[in-house]
Length: 120
Image (cartoon, rainbow, N blue to C red; front, side, top):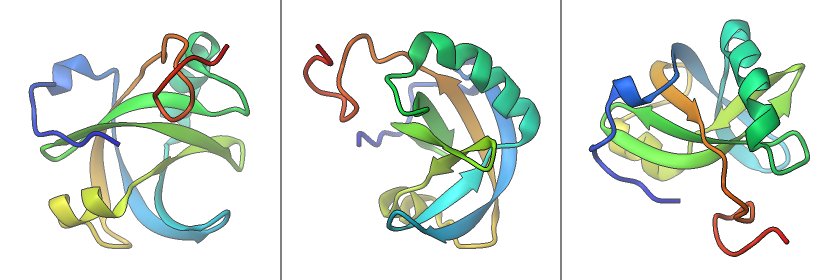
C-alpha cells in the first residue's frame, strides 16, 4: 500500500460519498466502509474495464489528506472499501465514525492484485 499526502485532488476522483467505519471479522479482522448503492452502481459500470477477477475492483482512494490504492470487495450485493490501520491512525478514524471518501476505479494495466508484476 502506498500512502501519500496530495497531489491528487478531489477533482481527480469520480465518486465522493460518506460512510460509517465498521469492523468485519471475515476473512480477517479489518475495518471497512460500505459504499452507498448509487456509488456501487457507478463502480459496477467501471468495474468491467478494471476488475482483475473474483469481483474485486481496484480503486484509488482519498480520505482526508491521505491517498492510496486498494481494492473494493463484493459484499451483500454491494462493495466494501478496506481502511487499513495506517490510514485510520493518520486520519484519526475510529469505528462508528462517518468518513468522507473520494474514490476512483483505476485499472491496474495487467499488474497482479498486489500491484506488482504481470497477471499473465
